[in-house]
Amino acid sequence: MERIAIVGGGPGGLMLARLLQRHGKCPVVLERDQHAQERPQGGSLDMHGQTGQRAMEWAGLREAFTAAARPEDQGDRLYNAKGMLLFDRNEPADDRPEIDRSVLRQILLNSLTPGTVRWGQRITRIAREKSGFMVYGHGWSEQFDVVIGADGAWSCVRPLLSDAVPFYEGVTLVELGFDVNRHPRISQLTGNGKMLAVGDNRALITQKNGYGHIRGYAGIRLTESLAREWGSWPGESVRQTLQDAFAEWAPELRNVIETGDFIGVRPLYALPVRHSWKSQRGLTLLGDAAHLMSPFSGEGVNLALADAVELAEALTATHDWSLVSQHERTLCARAAVAAEGAAQGLKSVFSSTGVEHVLEHYRTRVHA
Ligand SMILES: Cc1cc2nc3c(=O)[nH]c(=O)nc-3n(C[C@H](O)[C@H](O)[C@H](O)COP(=O)(O)OP(=O)(O)OC[C@H]3O[C@@H](n4cnc5c(N)ncnc54)[C@H](O)[C@@H]3O)c2cc1C
Image 1 (cartoon, protein in one colour):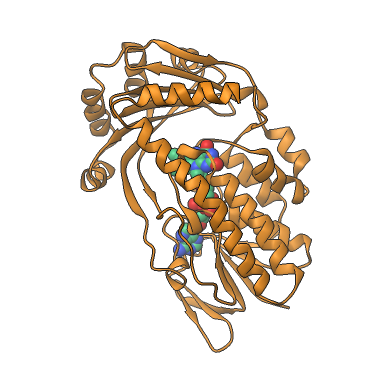
Image 2: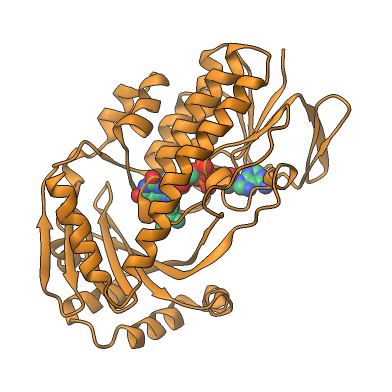
């Protein structure tokens, strides 16, 4: 039986493992985290019909998804920096139910044969051999016939296929956490879904998550070196600096920065739009490893899951790698559209006229 290594146990890698197992293959997932709860997994994700939801269907996980998803949390609110409410759609108007990232990961993990994920295995190097690949971790190595890079932004598989390196997009998000019970004002501000406040190259975002949580982000333009510096500061110093940067904003909005539990500093990186690579037998990429983009398209996880569906089909249909090559071309073309949108979305929001762009975008969506 073909030995398949999936490097990375994020949504894309786990979905691929699930689908391959349904086709009778026995992949292993090599994941650097020690266990599923090792680090905060990030906020709520909206799952799109033709990509994320379709993947859950193909994986036989529609029921588990529906039981855990929150269709009621698809609202959108937009404020300007003065705290004026410009747009409010507090209802589930789209078919894009939300699901917590950690819940999605757990559904996928529960669906796998026990032992599929090898936790605490950070891959340090991959070398092509006469037949197959040698995969190296700390103090061990193992041979595989096929290696799939599902290891996100800083993929260790990607350099074998492409010279592309993620570049900093000039914007950093500071992630904050809230508990609905302790923060009724933030809950009111957020409504049922996502609140975006935009003004002069800055933004505040709060988003309802499951289990009485709200995730928040303060977004600001920073140089890459300053973003790195912020990353090494204690949370209270980051908060103080943000308070100064948002000093002119309405008190109700500033409250987001003042009261949120500090989670971390997240500089936004992206791969060049239209990133692609020359296909190589036995080696491929999916998800952020293939097409990292800012979250301003809301497509990242959806693309990762869709990539997994098509890659699983290509890997199981025949031993001929040409189907995978064909899939890679489709994946790159589809991602290019989303990456263009994400780059444009980020540029629009973090501009002097950001609020007008977002308002226009929301109104167009309502009338679409
Ligand atoms: C703030 C923020 C908000 C977002 N919001 C949305 C949204 O609303 N909707 C949406 O669709 N997308 C959103 N995204 C994007 C989405 O999170 C990603 O596109 C998605 O997680 C990609 O999945 P993946 O499986 O490709 O990679 P990842 O989720 O990055 O998973 C990669 C996995 O590989 C592991 N790994 C990395 N290196 C190694 C190594 N060397 N060895 C072993 N394991 C390794 C990591 O630990 C991780 O578990 C958001 C992203 C951010 C930053």
